[in-house]
Length: 331
Image (tube, rainbow, N blue to C red):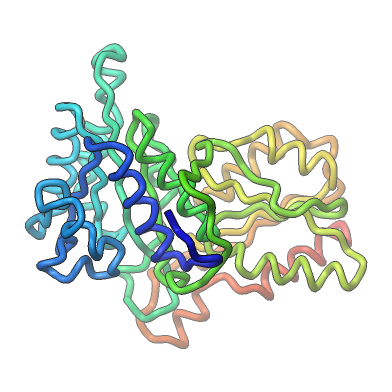
């Protein structure tokens, strides 16, 4: 339980893990260097937890993503609720067989007799010079796989509530943390804060345009909504929270009200989650649209290492602002 009025994202992840482990002795943590003897994790999310709960429940693993994912799946089949840390999202590709062909399919292949309640925590995000093999946002890959839930929080309080929900869910969940917002602060939630998966959140009511997003872009979108309010433009912000399953009803209800939609995400534009959201809006709210749906995303390129090129690769707040102005003009 947090007694602070505000917490940052790193503290939020740690709080969720601490609460989950205190509430359920079957929750175990697996990952590289996550134990206190190894420094409490590269990002210090698990610092103190092995001291508090023991090395049996907080296990430092070899440097093998296949082993981490495989051990988590096996432990889940034996009645545990493993939370496995894959240090960077690009490294998820090393364990794709375990995740896609085993974790996601075992409930179906067992006729519902076997569940795989694992949570895969991973981190990504461009902007800090980590290079192309440490910075990709690959949520669309996993959202394309039936049987996996894909979750990305946009505030510390949501990080607590969504991570707790993932750990308690009986199916595999991918929980994606943003590397650049780890020190960003927000209001601390109350104890045992748990949010429903698959339910979007209308963070700000508006009447002129719906801006639909998730994760880090919400930081810029909130500021833009304030700016537009000063110009007399009412922006509705929809934070989808869960990329899969996607809350189509909340998105469509918002767009039917405003008649305009902007979809923004950090991942590259082509074949991204924004395309799926835009398609569902077209399918269910076409007659309500006053302008074409706009997508804002990063460029279709490998994430550059050079800082100047990395900034050019990334989506920009000015891109979202321009998209809003264009859709208000009916373009």
